[in-house]
Length: 155
Image (cartoon, rainbow, N blue to C red):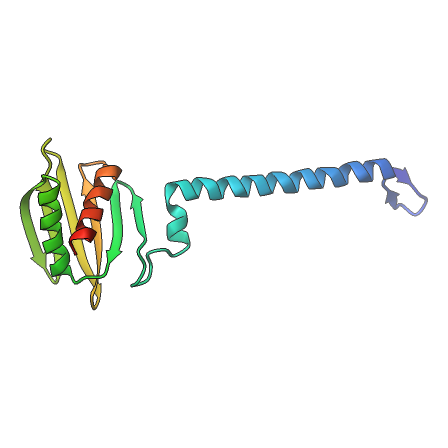
């Protein structure tokens, strides 16, 4: 740095260019970190929630989180419960029980390997229901998706 007599300092031109280059490097690192966060969130399905996919009545978004697959279908809860019975039959899942209260259904079944399957159905608005599928204690995403798709096919 160069010191002038009034107590002000001037930066050496070479150092000024070097520090400007550091600012660019910092900005590109920040941009890279932000891009990495978006990619990680995208892979986990969180971006679907952040973007609002599945938030509206007409949305066909499906999200898998914490061992549970959740989606929205265009049918009333009773129709979804009947479609769940058909899906269970197609996938060789034995239905154990159906509980109905306040327009919501909980359908419980068991796979051939005695893994518990729980499908929860709740009405959201006229002709629209939310469906959540959990397989086992910790979840099984591939099987949860197959069950969900079979329910949709049966509607």
